[in-house]
Length: 184
Image 1 (cartoon, rainbow, N blue to C red):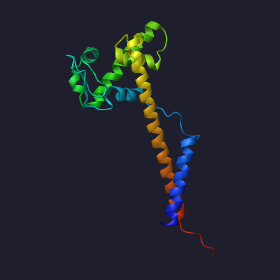
Image 2: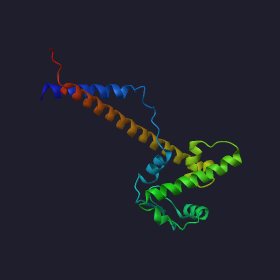
Image 3: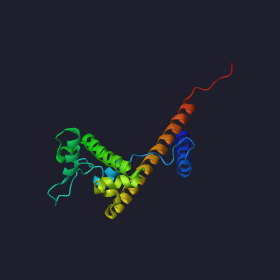
Image 4: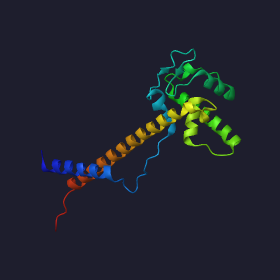
């Protein structure tokens, strides 16, 4: 091993240690993650080909586990003819339907309750249907989504730290490889 390699390795180790203890001032902490991405973890472990509720007549399909009542409502509102099976492997369609369904019912309840809904209530609507926000059976689901959100935050922090280390190493390499200025 060369001395330069050892210095770079030591510098990278120090940077990782420091960045894991202190978040740099320009970083957003915690980093923003989308709740819909956390829902995907809980529903299917991010598997767009997941088929759930296999014991039921109306199975759940895709990354957000979309079932027939949701596609029926979406179709009625958009004059489309999607089936839940269409969500299998189709992340874009699944995300569109999931996002619309939740937004639709959140807007409905906010208008009727005359208040904003919490993130937890919004998540519980996805799990328990239009009145899911007030069902006790959806509380645990919301907790799982929050835990999944924490996993996404940790993943994002890890990626940001790694990127900072790579940048530092590249800067050090550039500095070490820069031609030395000679006196004339």
